[in-house]
Length: 432
Image 1 (cartoon, rainbow, N blue to C red):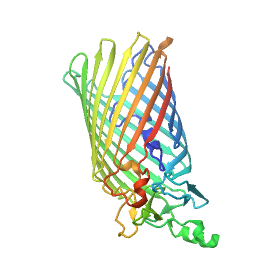
Image 2 (cartoon, rainbow, N blue to C red; image 1 turned 90 degrees about the vertical axis):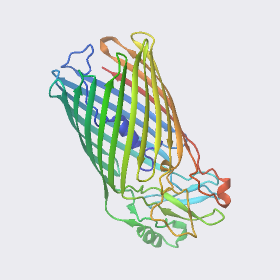
Image 3 (cartoon, rainbow, N blue to C red; image 1 turned 60 degrees about the vertical axis):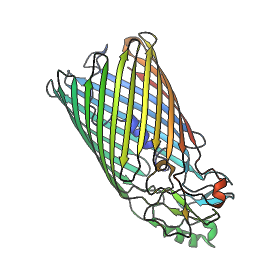
Image 4 (cartoon, helix red, strand yellow; image 1 turned 180 degrees about the vertical axis):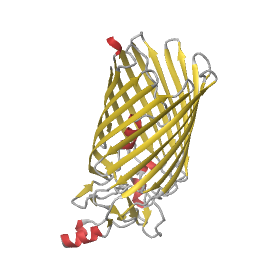
């Protein structure tokens, strides 16, 4: 998993740190009074081997008003640095690339995956959600969220309604969200499939700047996302519950990654140039999720499965489980296992052949290619005096990109075009 637009984990971090759409906020009954503030704080580190690094601080506060209303507010700040795969293929010789801004260039050694190491950004995200109990069987919630990065701005609204049946043993939730994003790429938006201008190919700086400007379009782009989710939760017994969700997401607008390129190679596998990618401007996604959770004699366990599909033919399966064991009333340990498998989007290409016509859409971004990944994690938590809690989490993540069946020509057969991505995640949390 990678971060942000050169890498997409900023989105992933955002999803991890925001409340899930459609889940009604619940008043946490513990040792504190209902009218007290409840505060959660955490700091998380995410580091890929030789690639993206991220440090994220999360603050969440809840304020209950009686036993019918709850205000939930969250602030997330993260800093991202490091190197991100550009999409170009490794070669037997040194390669030279122009930076996205057009100012300067970077080189990749023979046999190495091309990585742009100038990735730096800071993201700030804030959200607020209001949950209201309308009656013993009806609840509702509304929320707003926004985030800002150097080249990206996002604003969103969400709302949901919940109905309980069968003496609160069955709960049905319908929720929706709308998000509007504005993208302002560094250096401007690349013209689809235009060739990267490299300074060494031109006699003067003026000639180079003219060529570079021809590959760019001025102005910002936008993207709109509409999400809907239907969820049902069923109490199966005194110890077990079951949940099932169906999600529908419609996205329209600019979905091309302005920092990704494709290598154009000849029949010997040697790069003849680099083209900026192009993706469709619409996407319709469906997701299906099932989870069961049970209370054991000395712990809690859950199992879940998610299937996702879209009109890009990007299909995925996710299996996940957590097992929490209570060593005592105040101390627990938790094991986390996750496996993910993905089928490539229909326009994914590891590279383009120089003697073939250009397709309508193409991207060499391995994040939308064939892949599998797994996560192994441990977490320990301790309840302190006064209802406070401290927890520690450490996880190992490995992503294994795979060839989608593309025939490798010439020297590409000798290159590692699908290197594994390995990462460590560590988090410390405190609740009071």
